[in-house]
Image 1 (tube, one colour):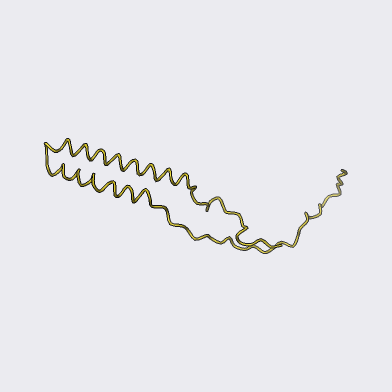
Image 2 (image 1 turned 90 degrees about the horizontal axis):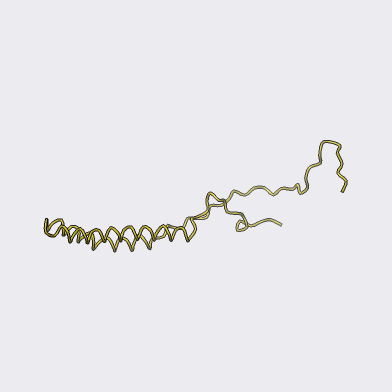
Length: 107
């Protein structure tokens, strides 16, 4: 009986990242970006008295960052095409080869 391509084992080096690890990575990236947004809001409040231009830059960054954070957090890596394992010729030899020495094992 021959094995189909679907029955071939997945090479560990080509295995995709697990869904849990990928989700954790995206969640951390989202948290970092939202932390930067919080810093932008605080920066806008602090720099309001010093420079209106700087405060407006912080406000714009605070408006754009949540949008970018959501896009990046929801973006999953592209699915890769399954690489086909090269087909090896079926082995005709099913038993172990005979030993070269004269030892006999009694059961």
